[in-house]
Image 1 (cartoon, one colour):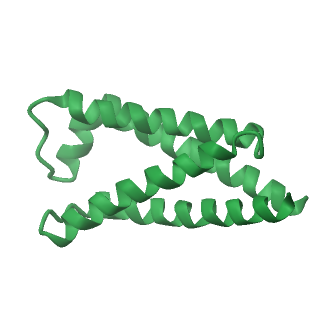
Image 2 (tube, one colour):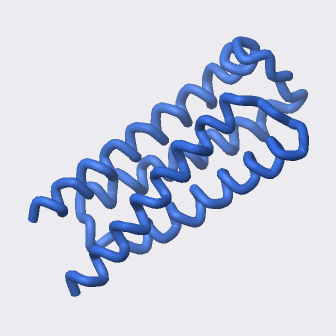
Length: 127
């Protein structure tokens, strides 16, 4: 039961993290990118679509928080999402597009991904 509480809190933190990041990048992308000396895209819709997806994933983590075992497939989707983002960022970082802020966010996502995998292992043993 103590681990259930840990994982519930993990998914609440993940929900807030993604929801806040998504909102910030959706509405304030110009300020954020300018602050980190990153060129603002010509067509902001691409960035805003990504931000909207991050908001949606944050909502998904909130659903997991509300009911860990009923929404376990959202955890699997979250792992795929965290992996995809981290892979793309690390690839571009290693090929010379070295915007440190995105690498820091990728490291946070890798940590979340590991914890999500731990939850899946724990949930599988509970069955």
